[in-house]
Length: 367
Ligand SMILES: [Zn+2]
Image (cartoon, rainbow, N blue to C red; front, side):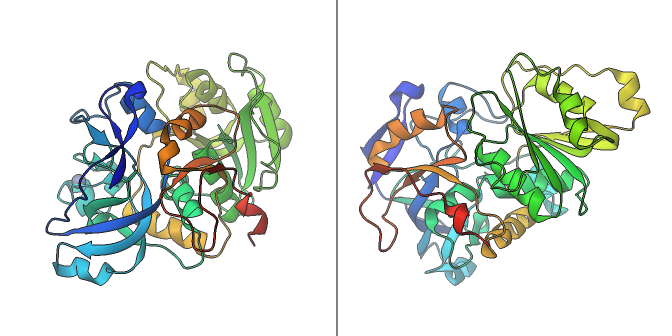
């Protein structure tokens, strides 16, 4: 089968022939239809550690495949045969204290598909059955691939920050990325008023269509005006900040935009990024800052359910064929697009064969 392999740094990414994997006990074989192209993999290719063991190379990348279960290693996994499924990127250990409490996002011994074991940027992938979740009917595979990683984490971030009630003001920074778009859509679906923030030059034109009440732009080194701009729309400050950038200055500015007892949750970790917190206002205003790197199984189930009704339908920035993986990862590394770059491994039923094309914005047809 064809698979996207890395043997070292990002320059070694290439499509190669490898054996179809065999599902072991408790595993399923997924015929992959689409998979997201993620910054996380780019960081790993560049040598970043994700905690735990480093990625063993060579490795098939692809953390969030979607497809159809075509074989199993037996047991209860047989119930999944023939199902359209999404694979959860973070594989919890199932045995630690956090897993036993249903807090799989905080599992102390989790591994990541495509990093610690071969991933789903391939024609087939073998994964633990407990990492596989049925997809709602009517969600095209490329849209599902754009959602699998981002929507559950966005939902987890909102829940981690205490949830939102209808009318609550939420600031989403890094709103044009896949996670930012998902956070914007999920928070809006839950009734929040979302202020979307993005760097100057990023494509913010569609953010209002995704539900943003206001869109703010700022320079990479010039975020001092952000709290004031936020308070022009939310005079008491926001209840929740979702930061999808991991930028220290941006998180610091966003903390200043929080209202009383507000929560800020950040999910992207830039190497070397530092956040400086002035302790007294942080204490006096009862603020909370959370780090978030994964989702619980419940977030996965509930996030996929949000797709079913069309209330959340993350934008697909572009669809590339498997053989164009190099171009796809280069595309994902740029800031000129809104939402997720997707690799389409098999053509969607009824569509023309993929080379490289832009996908029509699927959210424009959502309810
Ligand atoms: Zn665990």
